[in-house]
Image (cartoon, rainbow over all chains, first blue to last red; front, side, top):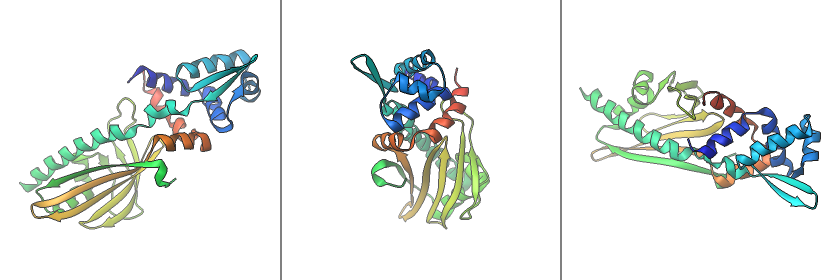
Amino acid sequence: MPAVTNNVFKALSDPTRRAIFEHLSRDGEQTVHALTHRAGVSQPAVSKHLTVLKRAKLVGHRREGRETHYNAQPQALAPLVDWMSQYGAFWRERFDQLENLLQRMDK
Amino acid sequence: MTDIATTRSLVIEREMPHPPEKIWRALTQGPLIAEWLMTNDFQPIVGHRFTFRATPVQNWNGIIDSEVLLVEPHTRLSYGWTSMGLETVVTWTLTPTAGGTLLRMEQSGFPSEEGANYKGAKYGWTSFIGKLEHVVGGLQ
């Protein structure tokens, strides 16, 4: 599994980080202050979670004066939802097995 | 959730030198399905809920929750295919040909990237992401 995908899985395995990511997805960009207010954990803890989310490219940021605004980058989830290529290989293999079975059913 | 613009389909077709009746048996009899697809408790009855099970692999827990949606003997078979929060539908179509049968499998309902982003922004990722926990549990 590529390192980025692994980071995405790890980043989202934590419920607080998941909540932060969902919050940003739903309500648009926020400051650490606003996120701390919602998350129910300390500001340093929120900052730490944001660092993990940024490393997984799930969250981006934008500076405006003294404030940093964080935003969700849902396209980072793409590797996780690219099931089609995985299923393509899966079904081709199953088609082979089906043909194999049909041949045996002849006997 | 059935908005065409936000979903994609996977189609695989193959002509097989066997009559539709025989392929139909392989598609609808539990022990035969198990030989080429997965262990299951399938019944060819519309509305029947069942499960496919495979050996879990990295990135996938091997469990498919399903419900029979359509049964047209020797012609068409459709069932739900839900795995780790991703809801798709698998439809089999059997068309007789001179040399046997054209077998078509369509798996529909895959999120497109646009759809994923749209849903991510609009509905949140609770359902999909919630399931990731199980997956992550199996990762090193």
